[in-house]
Length: 212
Image 1 (cartoon, rainbow, N blue to C red):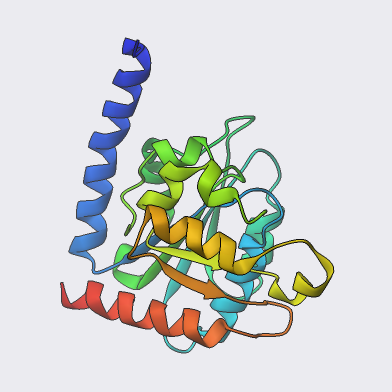
Image 2: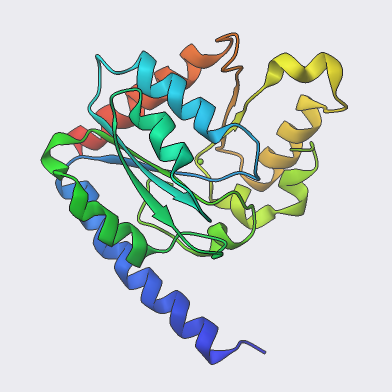
């Protein structure tokens, strides 16, 4: 049985997300919601991306976390504008929080907006934020909703593959069974391997938003 309160919360979030999507479209902004389990390397991916593409794009970041502004300070050190949202125990960001955070930005000066969600593969998948529709190799199979809705999957820390029991082909097969159009990138933010393919995808996606 669907609980009415939960349904109402999701419906309210959906209405705000539609408004966010309209704002992003109006300003030609590519908005990406970065979701992963804790420790997967979202922030390290952001640090490399913000640094390497600084001369090409005007980028900003909304950081979501339970407590502290550690990640916001890390990405701000790259020169990008960053705003921290602390959920005080909440397991995800919602559209209302993102809407409030946008007040800190001039949307006319942003090409790409990264929303780094709270480390979690369950709750964030239910709360659309108006973004452009992006662990063990069984994660896609365990969390189908997230991978079904994603535009891209970035497998970070591939430099650790010789030392861990992780099968990239199995993970890719599970993910593409759920989403045949999913873009897949194998990267290492430590060595730089694979990052250029990720950057190329960002360039094309950002260009498409500006031309929309």
